[in-house]
Structure formats: C-alpha cells, structure tokens
Length: 127
View (spheres, rainbow, N blue to C red):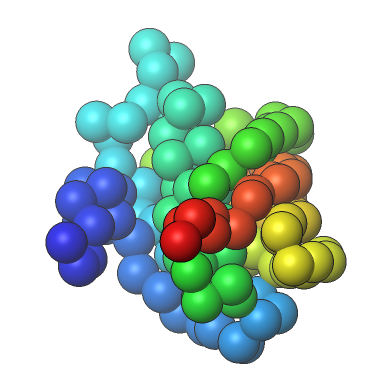
C-alpha cells in the first residue's frame, strides 16, 4: 500500500532524494506522540528513522530489504517549540547482500537530536 499507513500516521513527507545516496524526510511535531513531560517519545523517533531507512534501502537495492539492526543515540529532546523534525538518511556502503546506512534527526533550528545507524540485508527470493 502506497503511501504506507505508518508514513501517513506520522504525517511524514519526503523533501529530498539523491538516488543511491540519501533521503530526507520531514515529520511534523504531533503532541499525541509525546511522553508525560511533553517531549517526543523515543519510539516515535525510531518510527521516523524507519520511514527514511526503509524507502532508501529499497530504492538503493531495487528490491525489498530486511532491517537487521537499527541503533539510536538520543542527544536532545524534541518539543513543540522545536517544530518539525528533519530526518536525513544516507547510504554508507552497499554490497551485493547488505546496505549500511546512517542518519541524523534535526530540529528546525538545525540541532542534532538523534544519531542512528541501520544495517539491512537485500531480500533475494530463491528460485
């Protein structure tokens, strides 16, 4: 289903794509995704990253990919006054079997909120 329901739920939109190199996604702040102190809940950062890593890996491999690992390092919270977050994912290396990527999430002031890495395997159907 295109667009995927998770992309719609997050309100994400693609704002830049360089084939085989990078994908940038903007995600608006939504209060319903916050924790009790008003900051974005960590799992929602992971979901936003997945909305960049997933399409970037698929378009780079020209095939479905399976995420093997995704790490997140949280540096700063996202609050309503910080505006939308911008996720920029880039391909570090692609082999015949794997895609290695990294990403940053920034607020609209350009401050880094989250750093992430993702490793995916390219799904190849056996004939």
